[in-house]
Image 1 (cartoon, rainbow, N blue to C red):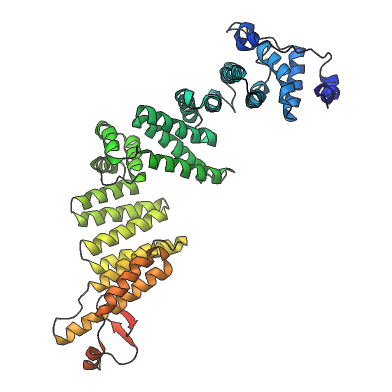
Image 2: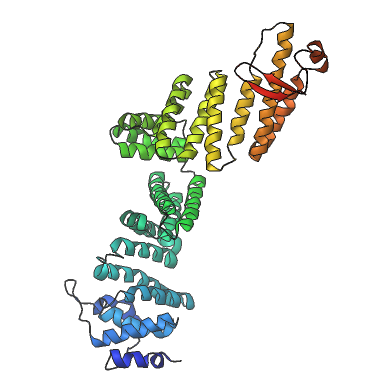
Length: 468
């Protein structure tokens, strides 16, 4: 069905006269500004403009992009302030015609038109409350990438960055994703890691906000795209710890009273696993003095451990646990509890304390319905048991001290049962420590201790186990 036939009923009511929209010459299309009014004047919206808006809009709805072009271009050049659909539909028209032509000159003309269209939209509709200038800049950045690719990637990055900064959590997901892609491409050209890191942080944080918004119908998509940009950053090389130190060492020194900046830097270092850096420690310590958070406390704990002050490290983890609980960040709580357990076992040899933290971490993970992470806690408990000497080193005591390996192996077995990710490590420990069980001969020498099938391992352990 022809376009005019499709619209005849609607236009008979809305517009008294059907205007003839002339197809622009190539010279006219390349210089639409010559037909535009002075910058301080708004074009007059005529009945012909209204009619042509209806014509091209209906054509776009029916994907008749070639038929839509003439009335659209007439409106675009004579009354570009008539309706926002000039630009939303116009982008679809120009993109469709660009893809349909093989003529290099025509592609170049349409590409230029596609970019100029966004600038004109900013002029006439840049104050629109729903789609303001910042939103339109995002469309311009995407258009640069669609039409020019790598050739205009720097211009695209600049537009996308301004859009993301202006729109915040209301940004289009694709604008945020393409910002990271474009910034990464620029980084590979000029090596400016600082700009790439800033763009990545902006996009990743905004995608994180969108993903965590329960009222956002696109939250799941935002979460997946956040994983994508995080992976891009991880493989980029910009996340190298020494490179981050070069960029942020002076920033920390210059912002010791700027909590927002210190927190931002600390979070970045944590995200890319550069938590052994002195710059990270300095940021955490300064932030912790201004306003303690679980992240700043955890950073201070890492700093204390690096200096060999493990008592202080555990004390900081106690702070981190309490602060994270207030924020209901339970996965972080479980991590902090495990870290405290590890230092108590490995460095302080406080086995009862280590078990206390490990059991707390297990309980936290169980509350979250998470099995992964529990295994490492059971392994810590097993290692604490295996490292314990409960009895004097006389003939009887040497035999009884071997009973700790029964309860230790119980924990290693439990570890791989609940958490398959530690199966190999747990199996290795089972094989190693089962060699040290009391022998039949040794149990025969102490019949009063090993009657029946079970045995109670006393002391701070206080657990029943099976005689093997």
